[in-house]
Image (cartoon, rainbow, N blue to C red; front, side, top):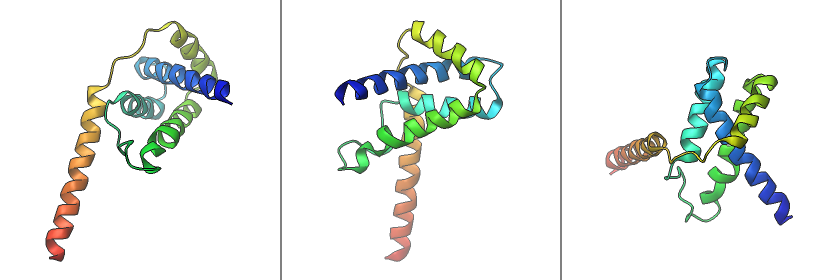
Length: 124
């Protein structure tokens, strides 16, 4: 079971790099490109939307959100292109942390905090 989990994790890493390559390729459909950028930025972000220290929910993004985003993006990319991107991804270096992804997560947290503060202020 552990070996299967390691294989799955390697496949996810390869798919993230492949989606990074797909996002830069002009042959990728626009919607797939947009979703690929969002998934790669979030996956490489050093900040999680739901912090890992929160019991159970902390791992929802790692176990559900990122893989579902990857699956959606892959389904939107033609299979021949995705095969090419995956083969190029296996030769590619590791990707850097995404500062843009971190900024998006921070902005979402700030907006959520602002909405919660506004709601509490009007309730009191």
